[in-house]
Image 1 (cartoon, helix red, strand yellow):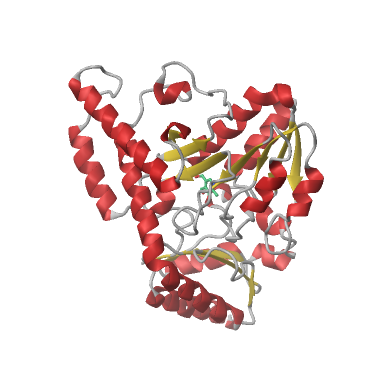
Image 2: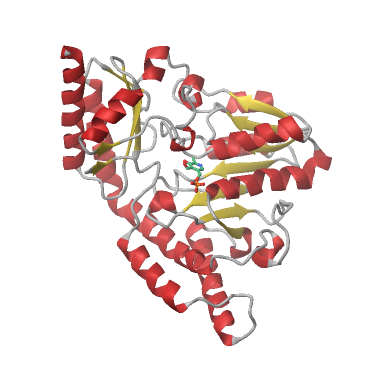
Length: 376
Ligand code: PLP
């Protein structure tokens, strides 16, 4: 089996799994219970929060454990919009945001009286700073632009964009960091809200994190108990939260250790694909080293994915969260791709332990399939 769909999800790191299993057996008590068993769990969860804060260079009180990045994005967007609508009702997001961001903005526009500007991107899938500057208004309260795009890997100029956002006093900046953590060096200095997911970095599914600057007030979406400082009611999944610190620590360590090796893999893949006349590249070498999108001009995505899958090779086309929709990728459409490119898109994505041999095997299989279809 050749699994090259790591932007969709990753295998669990064996170290994370072992820790999870041993903690799960031992720590079953409710962390809100005041007896020793509960206090012990509570303390471990707070230790994890402190460690995550250190890794992300933020304060621990600014971190909220969530069930996934989709939840973190929903809480950030609706929570901020509802709590700050008296300052204005204009929202901005880029055209290439993950569905857990852009669909939330669209819902706020359709049902809650907000107005929305969706920013175009250039041919490389990057939001230009001038484009954002022109879209900003006196009543803009929230801007969302992701760090690294999940379909093509384009990296956004977060610090330059943040300067424009913060020219409006009440405007907050949400950055979806799901495909950035453990892949590029993160800088949250100028970010107000940020979302993370464990399963994209060899952690467990059902585990995510929201960073929110304390001076940016959020309205909780799930209310009841006082868990997570009142921002997210409900008995927490402590063991997942405890193991998240280890997941992020390992992801950051693996990023450092494999940086140049993964860059060589992407360069190799990119050069091989560039030399094939049937292929048009959608990603460029300035983007994330972990994601490479390209289009097979002679075939459709589904046909190619099925043919690859029959040979035990797993890649995807557009974002896995929107594969059920029979439509072209909005990300590639926003980048101005023609219908041939939109039709035949494939995405290969690496994780820290992807090898050159695997990439060579992928290229060999891809060439065989393209050749077989062209001679049939
Ligand atoms: N944001 C981006 C950029 C993603 O790629 C994904 C997952 O595909 C998400 C958010 C949602 O993550 P989760 O599966 O943790 O909800």
